[in-house]
Amino acid sequence: MPAFIPNPTNREVAEAVRMTIMTTPIGSLWAGFHEQAMVQLAFQPLQLIADATHPMARQVHAWFDDYFAKRFSVPTIPLAPEGTPFQKQVWTEVVRIGLGEVATYGQIAQRLSSSPRAVGQAVGANPIPILIPCHRVVAADGRMGGYSGGNGVTTKRWLLRWEGLDLDSED
Image (cartoon, rainbow, N blue to C red; front, side, top):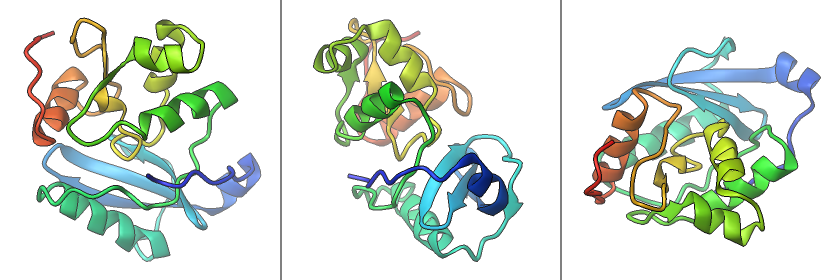
């Protein structure tokens, strides 16, 4: 499971975040790093300083190269997602969903004594998709729900199929 580490302050992020770009089967991915942790992964350009020499860039590129070659492993990349305490609780639950598995918004809500809607909002705010595998969270009836990255639900469905799941429900 990826390690979550304390977030840098906003000033530290503004001064020190670096970015690398990866080409993948689902499009370009932009990864942002602050010193010793990944802070963001996006399907669109980040307004950060490009620095493919960041020490973590090689590790992230290698993990994604393996992932998109179907050599799956649990990410060990330190993560520092910025969010509310509740969002971080949700993301901690999401990283526990194993490859080839899904959880529902309701199941996560029950574990956190919350509501599925609140969980859905936190999942939608995930700043590090794929590594915090929000694509593995679906509605109780098996529908995809939403996905904020790439081409939305199409990307979510592609990622689940890539990981070996083919859910019957089409949204």
